[in-house]
Image (tube, rainbow, N blue to C red; front, top):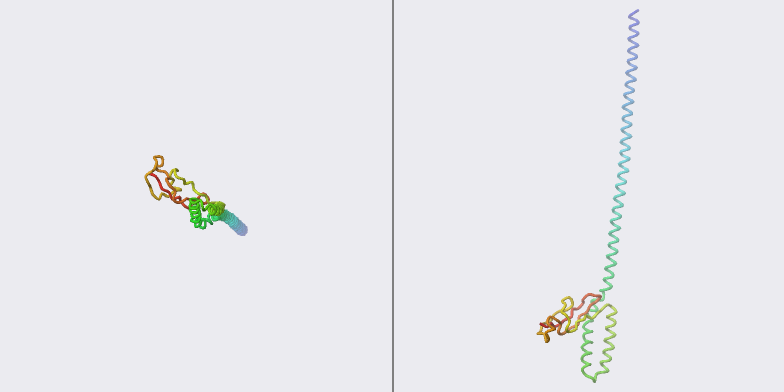
Length: 199
């Protein structure tokens, strides 16, 4: 009987061991399963975070691109407006430059008629036309340069045609005679005054 009891105990022990093994295997399986679920959750969270981070990066890049384009457009607009103003100021420069010889002809005609008193009426008519013509040009920004004899030679406004011995000691290095008047258009030289300098 002792053997029967021992056999029964052995069977019971084996069953308990089997149950313990089963429960420990189940526990291990559950632990492995829990770990896998945790890892999966972490991976999903990382993917979500990385997707969110990616979106934030894309938004930041889009904002940066927008700001650059906006800045570039503003610069273009300002530059375009400035160029238009310059164009308006200087659009008539070519035409006015071509009309300057006509002004010179009026000056010569005035001098010619002034020499002969018989042409007084013609001188008056020429002066009226000349003054009207010059006023129109001045309204467009034309200015005659101050290039009278005796002023200091300035290479920014004068073009020296020739040098002659100065008739007076005070005229050395100064303008002795003006051959052709100089003009400014909107404070820019469009024709240099052609002068004779004393030395």
